[in-house]
Image (cartoon, rainbow, N blue to C red):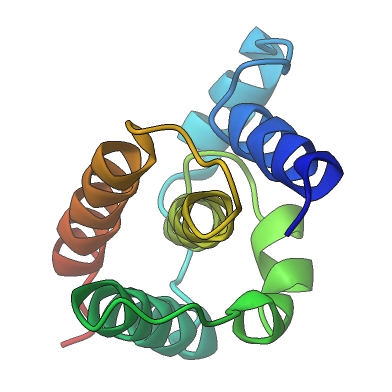
Length: 133
């Protein structure tokens, strides 16, 4: 991966993480009023698969791409109201995938592994929070 791709990965992470997004109070109020929408089982299963696959790839020091897995749930995740289980899990998984891509880039910063570890922990916590019974 070249510098241009690394910059794109970092930009995606910052955008998904909320840096570069305007905070829309009305959107937050709408999501709260709507309550917790039903979690889509495909979103949960895909995010859990991404978590497990990235964690395994990191432990085995493999450079693997997870974009195809994320693309399966992109439409649902991006069109879910902010703060709902589908949106939260999608955003967590997208952050993990972007950070994994950035970590595997040539010249990746030393903190990339730590950032990925934190993102994996957040995804795991949200998977546990929204676990399908």
